[in-house]
Amino acid sequence: MKDMQLHQATVAASKREKAATLVLLKYLIQINVRRVYVELGHSTLHKYVVAELGYSPAEAWTRIQAMRLISESKIAEEKISSGELTLSNAALINQHKDDLQQPMDQIIKDACGKSHNSN
Image 1 (cartoon, helix red, strand yellow):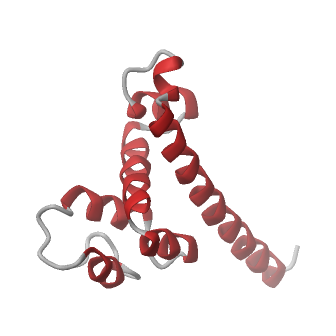
Image 2 (cartoon, rainbow, N blue to C red):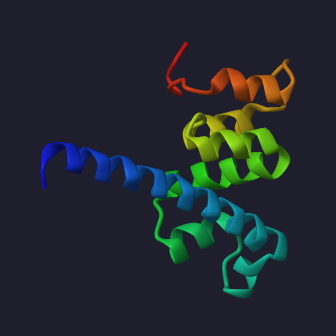
């Protein structure tokens, strides 16, 4: 494979991964609402995501927080889908949303394209 083909294939794989992540978050919303994780013997959604889906505890926490944010914000869903909002930033927004003084949509827009370590 030539370098440019490799690059193009990598970009395409990244786009597929982002799309798959959004589908996963939407499924997790339903798993949570229906409490399917309890039927499978898990006391929390987090335990389900770690045990059944194979994510590390930190990866599970990030996805669950992002899931909660997109369940409340269509803009967050759109920005995660487009790649403008990272899962890390979505998780941090959800974690601190009650402490933030701006409207949620503005916070989401401001977080787009930024590292979660940005000041």
